[in-house]
Length: 351
Image 1 (spheres, rainbow, N blue to C red):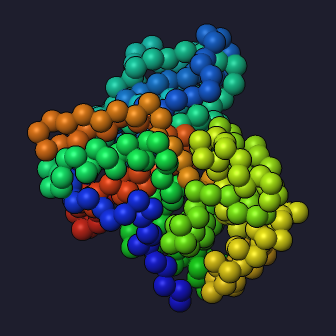
Image 2: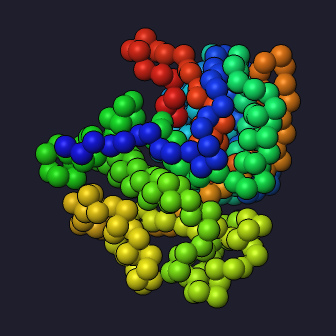
């Protein structure tokens, strides 16, 4: 069995001390930002809810029961952390059926708005999330924290997938490896999640290598450069390496979420092969599953960023684009400790 290292290196030096994360739900607040708003008519009812300590999937099931529709008729853009106060929108495909007259009522859930729309809300239909995070009892130097925060805002941070994607102690990775090797059967609904976990870890491994080498925020020959917004970009040649847009953050290098390759540059493929040399069997297994290779930026920038203090507690406000993790940003600043649940697992899992 592979030993999946979950201790990824930081880019801007050692962490500056420790602090408590998610000591109460109010310490971790998230508001999702969608690319469109409902227009007032159509077959789909969009409900915006605020949930505290509740699971997205569980709420979707309860919404289906409440509206008297199949569970598949309820959709959402993405999961939101259970251990916080989060606002997100669900869409219910009601056809011409009228919704229940009263608000949706559930412990830990408040209905904020409802409106009809002509389209369902689809997975991944998300611009990003606005965060308010309070770190409790920070034990490091306040000035050093402020300097690190400014560095992250101006120069970005490694776009690691969060540890919650890999399960407690990497359990999702262990199961995925056994499943890919034909040693374990997974129910079909779980297969996609485990494929995603494995590809995410292989991306992190490539990013970690470039962080150690100090070139995670620079373009190398043959890199695919992506624009700051969206997934568009281009395969760079030598003359692109000095592009001022890289230094300004308008362009960033990428690495792959492995799968069946297309016309990638030889230099790009050589770097992936070197970084993942000891995991070739996993990469081959992903290709055998006909998974398409995808690209992901190596760095990301917190936007609309603010820092305030309440005693020794830093309170961070920032926006991250869809697919980026607040925990990856926080881990560049401090070592965090989190409450544990009844099984002794830290409450880091996303729903």
